[in-house]
Image (tube, rainbow, N blue to C red):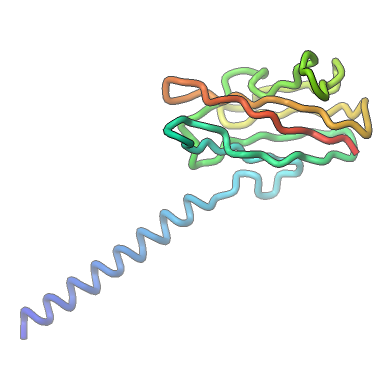
Length: 149
């Protein structure tokens, strides 16, 4: 009888530990760093073919002058922004370059970079690159777009 009660008690404690762990891990993994931040783009690093890669980022449509925030997600917290140029709008891009002075970018913290879209060029899609640093190597840059409507 005592062994049965002990086994049942251990099973209940084990089940509660698993449920609690799942709730804690699930909450951490689903945190959106952009909650409440307008024009915010979460940046996540995933592994593809054993290589760190920035997860695909959709294009962002902008309708007036303002700030755009790039925030590294908590699940990618081993990666950082090192310079203002880690989000770049190179004017030498072969397709859809941003005119000089269209964007002013500043690193706010290791996990956040803010660019002001001066909105000098409406009705234009402009490509940019993202670079994050971590784990002894730089993940590949991405090539999404900001679209001034």
